[in-house]
Image 1: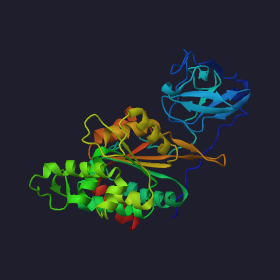
Image 2: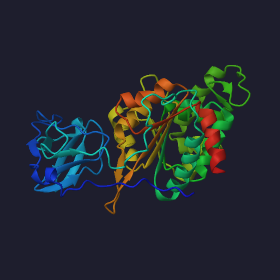
Image 3: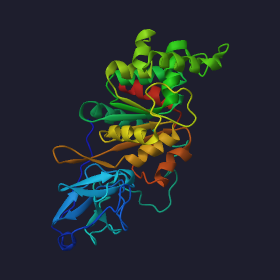
Image 4: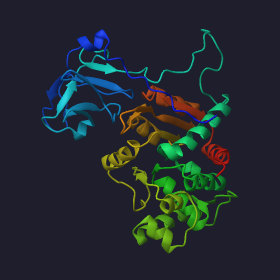
Length: 362
């Protein structure tokens, strides 16, 4: 059966509570980077604001940011990007009382289990994920041609020969439109192509190379000598790997720096807010997000990703968000952080990636 997007049902704005609602209160930001008292903070759900008698949707939302009304549209701003005088929506209610409506029911939901008590309702290492994989294969086939697939990956996927090869084939097959990662993923992937190791360990046999602890540093140093990853790949004749596939197939990638980074590689963002802006530029396009084996990047991207996307034709569609980790603690942590639409698969990144490539037939 071909994949079908879940249908979005917009609110019925002819209902009395919408018609009787006041316009949302707009208060100017008192100074750059500061919101007025009583500001409204956004969630992952579609939110509407009544402005001059019309209900407007925040089209590019982000949790924990503030809505600003500009040129008759709802703009979403991080606190640090507010400018003095910006017209910020204020109000802490969510059901029209202050011209603000938070809409969590737009995509409906699966039928709930009728029993109050039932086993295996959560995601754990004992859960069966067969259906999740089948649904994900169909989703990715749909999104390859009709959406935007964003991957968020930790270095674990580059430590194994088969997983690294599988991810490369998925990228080459058109199932990736962006990649968010850190210095480590790119470093160990390039180390695998350049020297056949990840942190000095053979990516296939897992045997340690003599002086292998230098290998990732030598890789970074050589790339820095070339001035860019692209020039390093061309200059050293590298022909495989995740980053090679991104470069070859024009898939943008953002590498966000960390206090623990070695080097780092030339494209790594050293400024955390520049990295955040670059990541959000990718997130704004994404309609499916898959995060693998990276807790901090997953939480960061989860906080940036709304549960919906407003398309150019005025329709609203669902954003699909998957968290893949060997720890059920991590899989369930996103819910604690507000990313309620996240779906979890508890497995290691290597097995997951090989399953995805095989399931897609790439």
